[in-house]
Image (cartoon, rainbow, N blue to C red; front, side, top):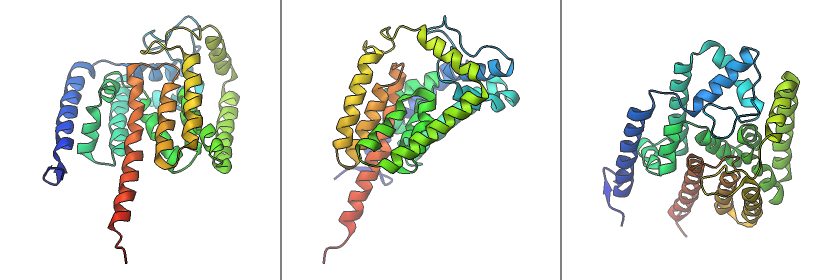
Length: 287
């Protein structure tokens, strides 16, 4: 039997204490200066100021470089119009905390325990988009397929959810997600075709085999692996296939640094839903 304190497993409290300590360290040593989130505010400001959104000379390690497709920067234009950089960083960090809290089942101790998974702690250090992508993956799997296209408009790899649904024979969900993505693309290109032209030129200037992953595996190889994982995931029953899709989307991230592994935290609500369902079935009396 699992030992508990105040109704909570001891292991959860230990992990929460570790995660809370890591969060305090990160907050004290890093949050006073902007990090990755500042690149998104700057990108929106460049649109506001009539400047080119992309610089073909930047690389994946250039500070505050905006490397994503245009929709995220376009979406943030109204925010950057009224919100100074410091307030944007503060709001972004708070939103990350909210995303993790939601992924942890709206439980503070479980959310802190998730930060004991080091990539999540590192994500709070750099304040990128991966926890938000984890939320979009769960929403796409459990609620509305169109959320996959929203994630794909940010970092492309959540678009694997469309192929996943198609391979599972969930044609309606795949069609919904693809249609949402197509409409988003039309609107975004219609708003600023020059920004999309700049993004294509930026991609053309990049070496696809250049190092963009902490594991030393170039993107083309990771895309093949992610595709194979998606095929396997579609053949697996229930929650296991969903979890493997999360792994595939993580592997396919255009730049897979250590912080990108925080996307794997999406497996937590998927596993918890499975265990909750099992407990519910066990609680039903057998006549």
